Each structure stands twice: as structure tokens, then as C-alpha cells.
Image (cartoon, rainbow over all chains, first blue to last red; front, side, top):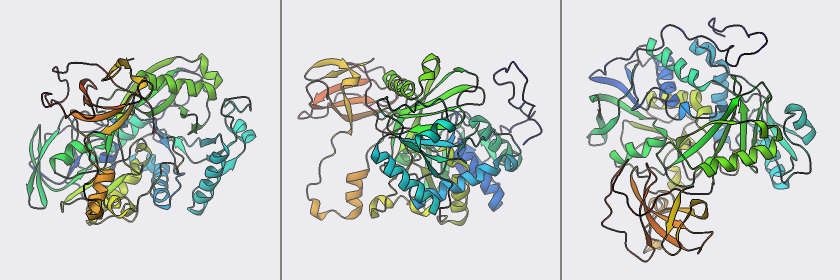
Length: 419
Length: 117
């Protein structure tokens, strides 16, 4: 824990009073240089983490992170911060568990408080099929060395007393999977922590710098055209989430992603009422309580393609109805704020971490609705892939050619994911 | 709640509609001759345009018929709706964000299939 952390305040508890102060300096805002060894497009969590591990694991520091808006201001600023690794398939379990292990040491690694709080996640089962799928997933998780257990409704009530475990509701809780090591982190601090670290190491973070084209030479990209001038590059790494297709269209590379608005919302600040994370596929809820006290909830994606960073209100309305069904105490809370990010969904609900038809262009996208939890894990394997010119073993199953070979990593119904 | 103009029923609330993705993606003429990559592109790959996109929509809670629409994926504004037998309107300017040329209808949509996690 960083020395900047202040002690917990005494009663009455002021929301936010126990949050740490920021250091005097965070990152530099340099002018772009003429050339870099590696240009990362996208200054969100994934881009910043990739730069961090390029520095830390591979000694590559002549790196620029280009961000069209402001640092960590896209999905990094808009997600619901859930971190877990209880995915069904081996390929997913490997990369998400790698990421979770890195989260467990990230505060020390970055020398910056990120308020990583391992409060556990309950994934509720409401039908017999839910129960069968959940138990199967628990067993698969155990075989992959991931902490997971099946708990019955009484246990659910002990872990999270505000869940309505009455049998007299539309979708009674029949039990849940439980991953105690799951948690939340303060997403902005994560972005800022990475940014501060890489900036100190010499990486240039260039905000307000939108990529408008690529300079191509055969099967290589030799430069990036931006709103702040042309930048020559040895290697290009794309980490642009919902805007990926805009970039790949410029490269004439076709990528099977569809960008959708994904909305989330918070309540006003409340005293601590919710000790863990609860997710339910059936009732369409995932909710936790942030350090400051807001209840944080995510909705489903809006059905249409959209780049507008906003969605339709009826989606929020349905989300609230589901939340109140499962947490009757929430009926007395007020909605404070809703917003949306643009998420890049794939046909099999798994990411794409891949080489491309260009020798020196690497692609990271397709994390859809769940990329935040992968931030350090992805950064690690993407940096390794870039540095070595071939996929890290954890990245290999997520290559672009799986859509041709048919080796999909289908986490649609299989993971603990709400759809 | 925004309104979507159904070509048969007229303007209706967006929750009556469901989204069908990119329009004008024909079934392969000679399916037996396609290789794996061509099949992959037919099955999995669709345009993900930032700007005006031709899309399929279904008026599920009304006439239950499919139709096509031109919609801006940034402003979410519809610039045209047309029946499936009709060609894509050529007169619609293919503009990007903040297009002021959109006419006809306003809108957005419906149902959820995927959620965050």
C-alpha cells in the first residue's frame, strides 16, 4: 500500500474521505517525437499496460502511446471495474487468471494505490440449467487452479445478506458460484498508476492525438499519420477497443467485431450495504458498491451498432427493474448518473490478440463487455507478443484466424457472463 | 423513447423493434465452392461502420416484418427506411458523425442480448 493512503476516517463517515491523495506529478505531456520503436494506438488501460510490460519485461522504452481523447477516458473511465477469472474454457481461464494474479501484486508494481479490493463474486443460479452449468464451471475452474466453489441459497444469504433469497420471487436464487479472490479496483487510479509508471520510464503518452491513416510499404507499416503529425514506427500495436474497426478499415484488414453502446449506472453515495459482487445472467444484474459508496451496476449492450457513447433509456429501466427484484433494498436508492461506453464485441465473446497480415502490426481488440479485468494480463501477453514477434502462449488461442479454422473460444453461454 | 418509422406501420416506439445487423449481405451464390476463409467472412464478418450503415430491422411487436434502414451509428439518427425488396436508396448522403442531412425519422432501438461482466 502506498504511503499516500490516508487512514480510514472516523464517524460520521464522509464518502470518499478515505481515498488516497494523488502524488504531485503523474505523467509528462510531451510533443510527439519523429519516430518510435513501438507505437501503441489507444491510451486506455490495455495500451498503457502494454507499454508498462514492454518496459518492465522487455526493456523496450522508446514507445509512444497515442490517445485520440484524454488518457484512460474511454471504456477505462466507464466500466464497472469487476475483476474475476472464473471463465469456463482453458484458454480463457489461463489469461484471466494470469491477469488476476497480476492484479494481486499491481499496487506494489506500480507504486500507486489502486484500491484493489478482493471481496468475492457470486454468480447466481436461478434455474436447474443454471445450477448444472454453474457446477460444471466450478469444477472446470478448480481443474485450472482457480478458486471457485458452489454455494447454496443459505450460503448466498450469509455472504451477501441483501440478496432476496426468498423462494417466492420470479427467479428464486437456487445457489451460486463463488470466487473469493474476485474483486473491484478504482479504475481511474489503475490508468493513472500505469501512466505515471511508464511516463517515468520514458514512454511518451500523447493525448489528443488521433490516428488518421497509416504509411504502408508492402506488408509493413512504416508510420502512423495523426492529427499531431506523422510518426514513424518500428512496430504498431492497436489497442483501440470500440474504435478498432475505424483503424483496421484504414489498413484494409477485416476484423469480426461489432461496436455497441454499453451502459452503466450508479446510485447516490450510500453507507456500506453490499459486501461483495453479485452477478446474475438470468435476471441481468451485476452490481457492486464502490469505495466511495455508490452502487455500481451494468446493463446489457444496446442491441444496435453504435459509436455514440450513449444508449437508450429503456435499457437502463430494465436494468433497474431487475436489480430491485433481486435486491429489494435498492428500491429506496436513487439513480445518480448513467453513461455508456463503446464496446467491441466478437462472435464468440472472446477477445482477439493477434498478428495481422502486416508483419509489424499487432492487434488487441474484441474484449467486448469485459476488458477491464484483463488489463494487466493482456498488457503482459501483448507486450510479450510484440517483443518476440510471435503470440505468447496465452494469446495464441485468441488469434484472428480462429474464425476461419473454427477453433472458437465460445464464452457466450459458458462463462459466468450475463448475456 | 425514440420513434422508428416502420415502412408498413409508420412511427412506433423503439422497443417494438429488434435489430438485425448489416443489410444487403447475400447468401453465397455457389456455397459449395467457398473455402474456409470465404465462409468465415460470410458467417462472422460484418461492416462496423462509424457513420451511415444500411441495416436490417424487424418490427416484432407490430407487423412482424423485416425492413431495411439507413442509420448513423454515431448520432443513431435514421436517414431512410425502405422495404426489403427495394434497393438501397442512392440519394442518402453517406455522412459520418453529426450529420445534419438526416431526414425522415428519428430513433434508436431495443432488446439486449449481451451484457457487461
